[in-house]
Length: 230
Image (cartoon, rainbow, N blue to C red; front, side, top):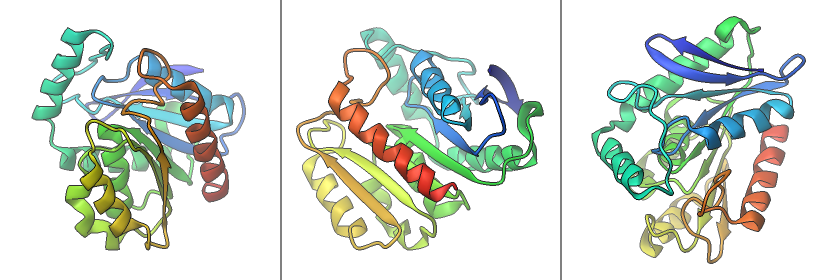
């Protein structure tokens, strides 16, 4: 069952399992909003027994926006929103969603264990949430600008997994090397490289998706959550 709700002034999309939720997972979108692909990811998680909640991260200046990355004009619009966005606000939003889930969001029963999966900008927020909140487990796909925030790595107290496509044209080889150098030794962090794949390879639909890579990354994500949100 999928519904739209509010956490404060922020819209959220909620996909609920048919029975009691095994845990909750916050799904942080790319720069394209809570579009059909993100809603599809929420529905997949709900089918696995999770309460999935996708926040509208651009709610302060573009509430309800849904964009298609395969449409050039909409891609440019999304980049403009990215330029306006303050990811520090995103961490506050994630904290608000965590509290709402644990209190009982949108009429659903309270859920204590809360994970997070994020994509692109959401991947950066997955890293930031791991360092700054009490999220129980986080997963980031092709997170941008994580290399600029590695000084926060010491604060990561709960498990974090990052999926890194080696041909990511937004996160170059030097940035990837810095991420590996800082995070490979971290006892709470797991990194997975995807040789030859580019940014957006695990999108649910569209031109960027790589079927084999997406399926491999998603299987690792589900195993990670099964272990750490039990």
